[in-house]
Length: 205
Image 1 (cartoon, one colour):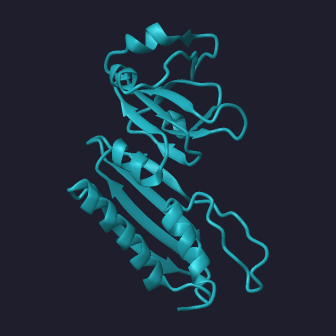
Image 2: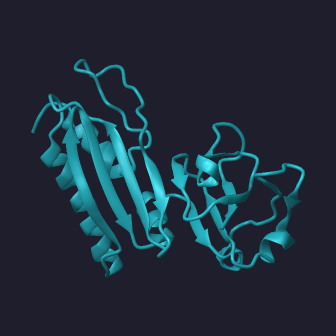
């Protein structure tokens, strides 16, 4: 095993989203954050996690990285009794590691990553115990707002509730958002701001 990998492997096993991946220097001192991680919500209800982070091959081994991910996914699937998560790709190129995982649904993503994550109908969110007593503002007009009653009265629109900080590509466009959300790509991508409440709400269609 190459020097430094036990720390790196521990980070992967505990997080496996690489959202705050630490890449240690040769002396084991300083670390830095790298970007490139995002989620994609697919129309069929599945979720793809795209993980792209700095990976120094002189300290870490691609095969061991892949094996660590596969072991964690296999453990989860065995406990779930189904192929709830699949590893689509793990590769290292030009000092960058890329991993793509496909989750069967929001519940699997939330459970595997120990995160708060819901996407679906607002009534389902309330039944699941999510607090919908919030005020959301229109992406087009911040003076246009909706409260809990409006959220519960939604029709075809979907509701996203999460506490993750990664960028999320919606299978639609953001219509209403909480005040701790930034919107980009014409309403198709949302992200939590660094300040404010850690839980974000997005109504999209």
